[in-house]
Picture 1: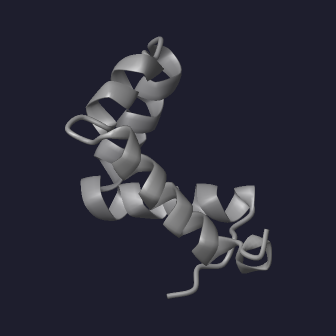
Picture 2: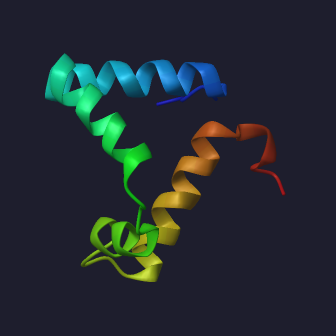
Length: 76
């Protein structure tokens, strides 16, 4: 599967679209408001996001995605 690189505007659009689809409009708006209102503990988010994964698992996944998104860099 080949994945194209998205610019910032497209990422924002798709992110909001995904939030609306998953949470509904009201909850998506509330979620976005919470992000700006409260301090965010990115360390805790990372711990929860990568819980149960080894460094090797994370690296393999990142390497696979990099090769899919940036095929011109694969020969390096």
